[in-house]
Length: 350
Image (spheres, one colour):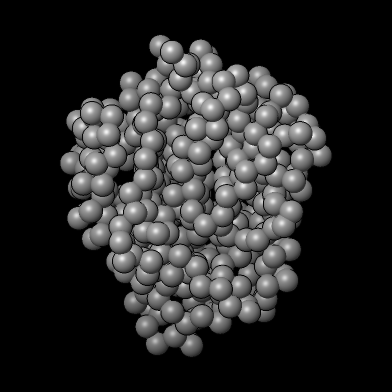
């Protein structure tokens, strides 16, 4: 019987610049207040989001300058490469594995374009072998961290004994747009931060937890729920439907369907580890999954301290959960463009 894939380590990294929420709110008021008639009402999101601070690859003044694709792309490549190196090194150190032992690198990122991709740009700095297999994945958005664990675990299972490194890197702040006078843009400026997370996975006896099951559910006709518009100035966020009501109605049946493939149900999960997209989304998740109010405490802490970093954010939650003591069975879950829910069940190693 083949050995199960084990999660060996999880590590996170953030860029150097701190964006205090009060400072971002003040900058948004100066930038949008006189140009957007509905700004005063929308500006309440800076207080209701549950976010105290975020981290960014550039200081706040940089985002208040006129920026186009070249400036945003440079910030993405520079910031994402550094975060890749930082998160990868921390995960490898935690696993007690050298970079030369890594057989496959899965890179998740949807907030910029880099060709060659990030793991190639960072390879020499991390110390990967020349024959390391590269698997860059684009377009998964907020679900990318969880889907990345699924992809990495399948690759590890296909080659027992191989070491798979997953790195999720997002530079969401390059999507801050001074030219877009839209509700979605205001909300994005109140939510998004930059960060990275990395995991080491291996089909082995040793590890933190075994990857038990994984799965996705994509709802039809939901392309307008979440995503990016691309124009000459950069990426523009799409939030065309209210996400919390959607979550409250549809997420539990989708997760139940995924768990049912392994003859499990919602009651078999000891802890849901969810992507904290925002405070209202967390409240909707607690109601949909019949959790006590405030049960998603690590999620709220991560949201408050880092904001919504897209793909890595769920792995920040997982890191906190591991540090506090992983329960017997954890379901890591996130939702992203598609509109898609992604799930991975982790069984604590004995």
